Length: 139
Image (cartoon, rainbow, N blue to C red; front, side):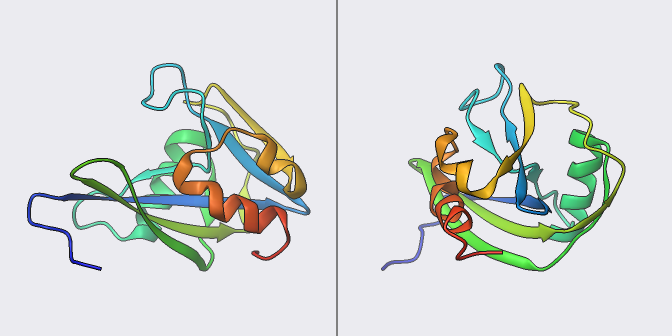
């Protein structure tokens, strides 16, 4: 496999997999977002000079008003939705947070039993991990 050329842009993104018993917090992108109404894990872009963990903590406050303890890195995935752009996603497990999630930006948020997750229309980059979580192979 060849290395990406200089013309390829890599966007670094972080996501949190919030675990509550056998349920995972799933978020549906808003009508105004690219890939609108697709399901995803909460998170967002990593800003320059920001660690993945700091970015996730910031995004969880912005999107869900949650102060969370960022757990271990679960998976790193590189995915290309469009030519010339690679999304590098860092997924972290989160078991501890303060308060209840408050939907600030999504069309919908819901706690979903692991086994039910594949029924949601997740972003393409998340599908493999969603399947493994549902099958009990991850987390």
